[in-house]
Each structure stands twice: as C-alpha cells, then as structure tokens.
Length: 341
Image (tube, rainbow, N blue to C red; front, side, top):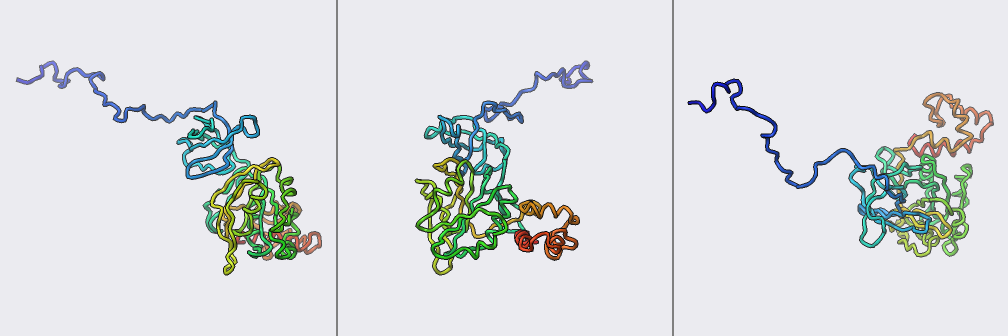
C-alpha cells in the first residue's frame, strides 16, 4: 500500500508552506552585512600630521582651546583610498586623545592640492607625498653634495603641476658661492634664501612660512632636516652626513611628518630623495607657471610641445620677433624637457 492517498497524486509530498523551512543559524553569531553605510553626521574633523604603519596622528580642534592629537585607524568604508600627511579627515569613535584611545577615519575631505611623484618618467603610478600644502620649500646645498639643477627643475615642475608656490633655500653657502647655480632660475621669479651652516635664516623663514602649510623637499644630505630642526625647536628630526667618497647624502628621515612652526603654520618634512619621477604630470600645468608664455601659447597649433623643433610654435615666433627674451623661453623649455619631451 502506498504511503500517500489517491487525493495526493497531484501533490505527492502533501501540503507545503514556507513555515516548513528550517533556517540555519548564522555560524558567526553576528548580524548579516549590509551595503548601507552610516552617514557619521557627528564625525569630528581633523588634519593628519603623521602616518605610521596603519596608524594616523590627527590634530583635532586645530587652533582651538581643546586642540589635541588623536590616534586613528582607517575605517573599512574607505576601501583602498589612501590617507596621507596633510589630509583632512572625519573621525568617529574615541577622539579624546587619551593614551590607548583609537578613533576611526571614515572620510577623506576633498584635497586642495596634491604633491605627487612617480618612480620614473615612464611610470604613471603616482606616489602621493603630501596633501593640502600651499608652499614647497626646495632645499639645495651650494656644495657637499653639489647642487643638481635637473632635480631642482623636477621639483619646480611638480610644484607648478600641483598648484603649489615654490621657494628655494640654498644651504652651506659658507662652502661655495651659489650665484652661478642660481642664475639658471633667474627668470622664474623664485624667492631664494641663503643659509650658512652656522647661521640659518630662521627668523626670515619663519615669517615667510607663517600661516602656510609648507612641504620641505630636497636631495639626501643637503641639510633639510637640520634646517627643520632650527625652525622647530624640539623637532629632533634625524640628520646625517655626506659620504666623502661618493658625495651622496645618507637617508635619515624615513617618514613624512607635519610640525607646527612657532610663528604659526606647518612645515612638512619629507624623506630625502635622489630621483623625482614626473610620469603623472600634465605638461599644460608647467607652461601656466610662465603666464606671459602661456598667453602666447594660445596661438600655437594643437599638440605643440613648445620645444625648439616644434613647427609653427607661436612662442618661438614671438622670440624671433624680439617680443620675448630667448632665455625666458629657454627656462620653460628646460622644465618641459624634464618631462621627457
């Protein structure tokens, strides 16, 4: 005899409804994940001043009576978005700044400027150095190590591309006269400060950097960290010496850190480098640093590189007519050539 009746022929398994389903418990005992993220409307704004192995030092209530430095980790909702020194972030969690406390950075605010470099000129993968700086302090030694015009050119290109105002400090002027080297940049209207090993222009620089966020860059061994230590008492940035055989500086600063100046504003010390790739740079941003040339370049044919072999270049024609000084165009072409033109 069959175990079902004739009445169940059309529905051999009998009557069925959803209540018969047995739900398996969540083995992790937690709530299911959702794509809906909290708005964090009460998040607290802060500025990143240090980055160290997944932990970020963030100043909150900057300039206020309750200013403090909070340690934060990145929140999962940021995904792969990088957080760098100078970023303005939104924090949730424990923002007391007490020892052992940890907040979470849930948002990175829109950046005003972004200083980047690549490994070399063919590498379009950018390495972000600092965000939201408005000045670049290019530190170069008059000697020991010898000044490198090409590297300074590259710093200038990166600054112009990022929309950051460049300044130049020449250190160790007691060892050599930097006049010949500085003549290469006479047409760029750069502010230049001269520094002796025993007499850095501390007061003059503090006044110029006050109220700004200035990123200091330079070749290893030029005295950049020594200058930063003079500008910021107690900074204690590691310093090194130049190898007498190779003439190269030794890498000492291994991290990028923002330091508050006594006169207000911040100076951001970066590790010394020996190369500065420009694979990410927009050529048009470089020429815009030369406002007079940029205006004439509007008459150039599409795709003009503004180099000596460029046909029908309006700037070259203006030079031939005597409207623009040749050395002015030479300076622009040198910077454009740094991009591999």
